[in-house]
Image 1 (cartoon, rainbow, N blue to C red):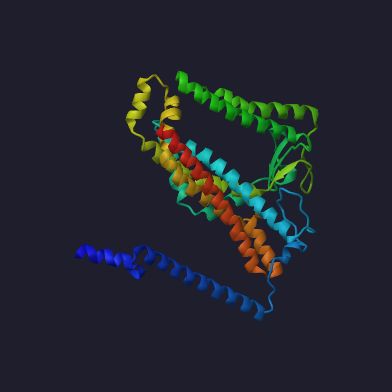
Image 2: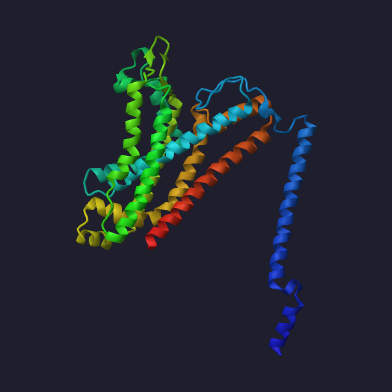
Length: 391
């Protein structure tokens, strides 16, 4: 009788059907969310119209009429607001990319150093981590900016460093090449492709014959080809060398003190967290793995590279992804020291046009795209590390 009642209720369907009930609840929640969004949107449009505030994205094609101190693409005050936002986005991307690379290198070094058996190296690495990660990032940016702009000499008294480099209050000045860089970039691309192909070949060879593949051919391809191309260009093309004058420098390239302070602050701050993540990942690997590698005749460096690090990455990659996301979003603090990132230029455009909603929407979309790109890459790398670890 009870089984027959259950079967009758199942056939009846309706609200008593679990699948139908779950779908109905989801549709109801979606309708409520859509209604709230529509209400807020209509309320926003009504308030803007009541205050005679224009809407739309037509302002992007109007002349910006302001200069930007740091730009990686050609820009002038006659350019449009859209070009200014593009400059800010590129400035943000450059800081985020270089910050990820520098903080990873520094964090790896500090993380391994904190596990050293040396009685001096390990405490220094631990002290660095505890000091840097417990001081607010904004305060560290202020300190680095003050050091670079107040303690360095002026242009006329700036000391000449090797290779024609000058470090002054106005930033880092260095010689540049106006032509021939395409050859260096082409050599770098060819080297990357060749190194990738060599890695596939070496992995297949190691699977067949055993033994770790040597690293020097890959390093030679990645660094040797671009270096040879650069030497060829340097010998055939004259450099534009910076020359100190009474009021600054003429010629050469320049890295502004704002960019330098931002890179140093972001890199050192995130390196402290990355060091702890890597240290925890390395310590999660069973000690017997290193002992087994030593019994097989592997040296300590080979053990770390071939046995410990691959297993530690399976633990370290997810929190590393979160740290890279934090670094990308923390680039918005550049506004505090005057670096023209996306947030700084966006605020300037808001002050000039009054179209805060549109500019904020563009900035939110840009930061969301950057974060999703980092997440997608780290998820791909995490899956690759997991597959390698399970083979």
